[in-house]
Image (cartoon, rainbow, N blue to C red):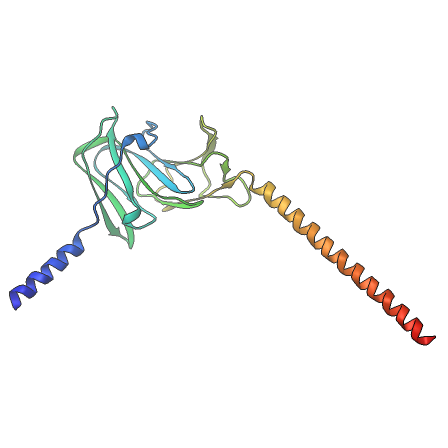
Length: 227
């Protein structure tokens, strides 16, 4: 019985060490802007694409905001746009999921991957350099509901009219947080508040009119009783 027991225990341990297979993506899925020493975060409501520049390194790593099943479509290309062979694994670092790209020899070029998106995104930095967050078209952090922390060194627009937030060498500050809103949100909120105010004024006016009518009816009834 003992040999079978140890074989079963070994199979369970080995299975527990194996991570789910991560399907690699295609460079055509990403914008590869050719920016040196820069991490570009393309934010969207449904997904976030992260493109990072690697210079003469055998590895590159990122903290990811969700579990390994949501880490998708990793790619690596050199400066000429050629696919480069790599391995990627998800490890637990400081209690957080960490995606690690590894190369068989020093690599220079770009790595990219996709993960779930939201309007409130936090990027945990692992190295110094420039970080650029590209917002969806017609979205901004400049409204009173928006957040950009720490304050960007620059905010500009790209050729597609997208707002781009730029931070230079903010590491070792750990996190960059971006919460963005539709540019029309303040206007829509203003109209909503006007609607609420108008509705409240109408209800209040109707209440006072009803009270006034009741008072008149009561006065008439009391007058009839006195007669």
